[in-house]
Length: 159
Image (cartoon, rainbow, N blue to C red):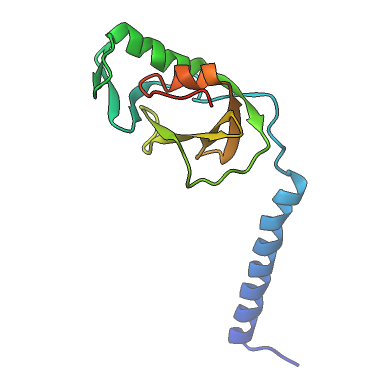
């Protein structure tokens, strides 16, 4: 049985699609994603924060200083310390799954190297605080003291 030009084109197209399908799935089998363990940084190393926003608060870099827009009264040094705390914070990965509709608060970071903001949602479940990293899609566990420091403009309760 002889195939015409159209038929051979179809054979080539179908074989290329099958090859793409198998090669695309093959890299997932060869390099499976490893489970995150140990402390994880919140912000990328050497990140340059332009803005940090909480609901009702916005902390912006103005040259080499910082200013806040919102009812929280803080000195530029306090604002710099808050941003530095976020940049150096490392939290342990938690194996939980919480209802993402019940966030206590959210922190968003605009970095110089990224177009979209990084978003972290704060949750309280069974007396324990958790932070959900929306970009990496994983949960991080933090103590009341850590939550209180990272979300300083907000009044968090210990229970």
